[in-house]
Image 1 (cartoon, rainbow, N blue to C red):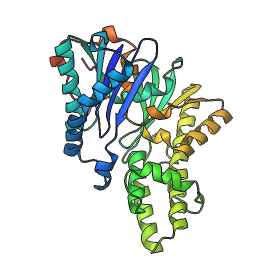
Image 2 (cartoon, rainbow, N blue to C red):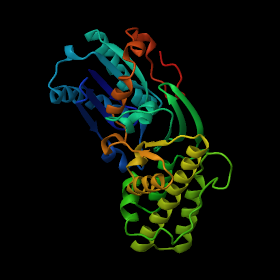
Image 3 (tube, rainbow, N blue to C red):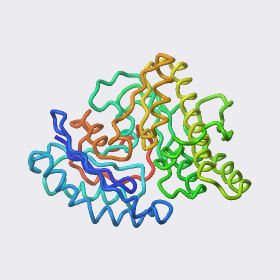
Image 4 (spheres, one colour):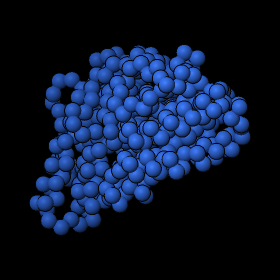
Length: 335
């Protein structure tokens, strides 16, 4: 039984994963706190984590109907992420580990995302993993637990960051992903020819920096925007951004001869992405695996799930070796 924490950004997340697969997965969002500021403020996020994490942990334990002495392992995200936020979760987990004499498993945040789509189902290696969020757009070849090869990544903005920037230019607020997804359902996705960075380049890297400039110039040239204009821009941007992800990912699947592609991270909650990826995968004989909706954004259940693979090998009671690391490579030794 694992009690896990994730405080990598602005969501305080606590989860309990039982050995029979039952779980409790709690997330305290800070969207209302940061939305008026146009983005996440690290110091403010850390303070909110510190205010809520103890109470959220008690609630998770209560809902799981267990006691602390039934916990076999603790797990916590140690990186990457915002350092002030990471420090809160790591310090809290270490305090619990020390006071209750429970071994602590340090988990890489992106490894949590990589395996989240397979929660509740068998994993077959190798597979391609596309992690798309506000901070990441990475394509991995996953050959086993701890065996990852980056075969593509964004060279500038992450796709989730592009969603937020475009939403800000359209006056839609923060976060941008959900509102663009909603507006796109009534917009014309072919009205504007939004650029697709590195579309004709060899390899599997991505670029989304040009989108912001394109939309900014478009908004300035059009003057006042009607509701239909905003919906059309949102839909055109969304289609172009998601389509390039699909095109390059499935092309990589063919080259690396894999039949399974997983998509995870906050952007994997996008309805167009989920529908279009599955449709394209079916066309080309690729099994597209998506996480349940509650495991798309940052959450502690994916951290507990990743920690469940090899707890005896990765757990440590030498707490001085567990440190928050705002920048850490996937696959880098954590202990």
